Structure formats: structure tokens, C-alpha cells
Image 1 (cartoon, helix red, strand yellow):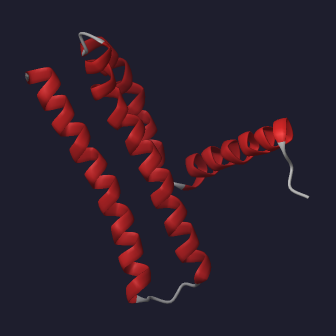
Image 2 (cartoon, rainbow, N blue to C red; image 1 turned 90 degrees about the vertical axis):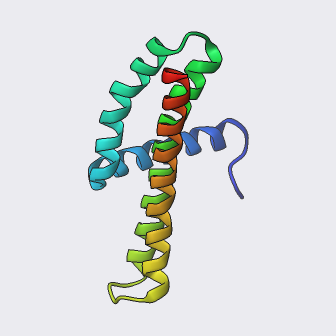
Length: 117
């Protein structure tokens, strides 16, 4: 029987914590993006004149971390399948990388519009 209620929530918290720890330990890109977030989030909160501007400056930073976690999950699943090169495996990894890049583009566009706007 699947856990329900508070047990399910506590289990989910534990799985999430393990995911963050695993990403920190295994993924240099995630570590770099967390360090970037430690600078960009306070700066975005300081530069934004109101709640909307702060959300537009900080939101994409958090989105980058989310997309990086998903990209790392795709890469881990692909690597679990096998080490041999396959066109679809490479495409999956490239698509994940493109998603991270797109989230950085969103960050740049938002910062340009809000800070220079």
C-alpha cells in the first residue's frame, strides 16, 4: 500500500533532499548555478522596485535550477541505460542542455527589460 497523508509528504521531502544532495555532489553545472543564484537572487531582490520586478528578476534564476535538475535527471537516466553512443540518447541530452540555455536566455531578457527598461 502506498503511503498517504503526512507519511507521503515526509517521504517526498526526503526524496527531494536526496535529489538536491545528489545534484550538488555529482553535477558541477548545478553547483555553478547554485553559486550564481546566491549572487543573482539577492541582487534581483535589491534591483527590483516592486514585487513584480523582483519576481521577474528572481524567478528565472530559480527556473534555471529547476531545469538543470531535470536535465541532470535525463542525463542520469540515459547513462543508466548504457554507455554506448546512440543518436536518440545524444538528442535527449542535447535537448536538456538546450532547455537550460533557454532558461538562461529568459533570465537575460528579463534582466534587460527590468534593469534597463
